[in-house]
Image 1 (cartoon, one colour):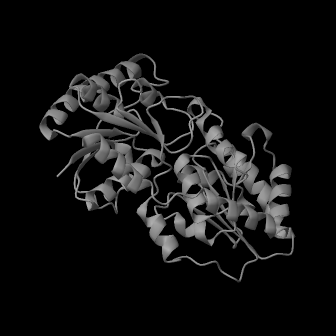
Image 2 (cartoon, rainbow, N blue to C red; image 1 turned 60 degrees about the vertical axis):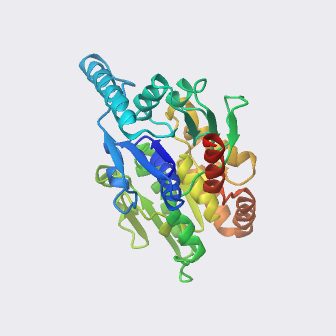
Length: 357
C-alpha cells in the first residue's frame, strides 16, 4: 500500500481541495496521513478520513514583538515535530497544498530528502509554496499560474469536494418556482462594511421591482450579522446565515451568486454552473483573489467588480439587468460548463503513481 502524507492550511480554501484528494486516494487503497492546523476543526465534522493530525502553529505574518517571537517558536517546535512525524510515518510522497502549516512539514521533508510535490490552488503562487518550488518534485496547479513559468508545472484543475459532485449528479436541491429570482451572497467574513452595508443597501432596492425575489446571505459570523442593515435582514424573503458546511444547497437554489474570489468557492460555482459576480478581497495575499476571478473573467464566465469601484448603484444596476435579462445568465452557465474538469482526482492519482514508479 502506497503511503502518502497531505499537509495543508486550516482555512476552507486550503482544506476542502486537500480533503477531496485525501478521501479519493483512500478509496483507491492509498495509506493517507492528513496534517493541518486547528482552524480546520469546524470544516471536518463529516469527513471520513482515517488519520487526521493537527499541528499547533500560527502565522508570523503581521506579528510584532512577543506575538512574532511566539509564532517563530511554534514554527520551530512544529519543525522538530515534523521530523519525528515523517521518520515515524515513512511516507513515500508528501503533498503540500499551501498554508503556513505546510512549512514545517515540507522543510522537514527537504532535510530528510523525502519526495514532495506542491499543489497550488490559486492563480498566484502562495509564499510557502513559492519557498519550496525549486526543491519540489512536481508542481500541480488549479489555475494557470500568473507569476510562474516552470517545466515542473502541470495544470490539473481544481479539486472539488465529493459532496458537490454528489449534489449535482443527484440534483438534490431544485429551484423553487415560487420565486422569479434567487440570489446568494457569500463572503461576509472578508470585508464587513461591503457585505453588511453596501450590498444590502443595493439589493434592498430589488424588492421594489414587482418581482418575487429571494436572497440567501452568508454573514460570516454573529458579529458581522449584527452589522447588517436592519430593514434588509428583517425582510421575510432574506435569509441570513453564518458558516454552512453544505453551501452547495444554497448555490443550487440560486440564479446568481455575489461572492469573494477564493479558489474553492469559484471552482465549486463553476462546476455547478452557477453564474457569479466576483468582488475580490482587496487585501488578499499577493492580490490572489483578483487573479482567481480574472481567470474566469477572461474566459467570459463571470462578472468582476473591483472592491474600490463598488457602490450600491453600480451593483443594483448590474443585478437588475441580469434579473430582467436571464439569457445573459444562461450564456454564462453554458460557458462555465465548458471550463469544468471532472477528472482532477484521477489525474492526481496517475501523476502520483508516475512519481512513485
